[in-house]
Length: 272
Image (cartoon, rainbow, N blue to C red; front, side, top):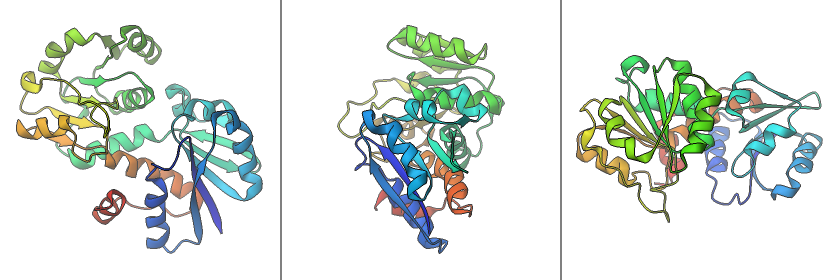
């Protein structure tokens, strides 16, 4: 009976148990996926205890992704570049870490915007947190020629850009109109537009008709940014697919079966 879970603080909002529960039932896997509320001060000890309790691994969410990086015995090169871990796999008494956020982001983008091509042009990422870093790495590796990070705190965006190489640049909010005019892809990686948060204030009128607009927020499923994109006839990519796709590698590692992302899964996870 394989065990896995998701560690966060708080954790009651997480849709991961609903997601993995669907796959466990669909694939008839004998296993459980459990929400694990763990306070930051307890995180290292809690993670080290999980293998002893029979866990095969765990997902890690806010605020633990950087702490997870530190607690691992080994971390793959991708997670090293991103600087954070969201998936733990326990092997022979050791803790291995990886980051599937970039994989999930790119798989969702390719799923919902099949006409988009990495070589189509620059990407603009709004925000400079862990999600922006994961998305930037994925886009660079896919072949996007330039990624620009836009953040209220320019210095934070500049620090991330410097760590990721010459294909990544930083810009201030005042440069957004000019950046949108040449962008093939625009991505909101902030929490703006989320339920309980103010909307992202951005004018999409400078975007070309072929520009793809993506939002990593998935509550609500259609954010004000995506609604504005659709009103202009632009391709809009919502955030729930990233959550679904990023879960695939972890499920396979823990339960030994590779699941697929489907329309029924999306409906189930959204609870509609």
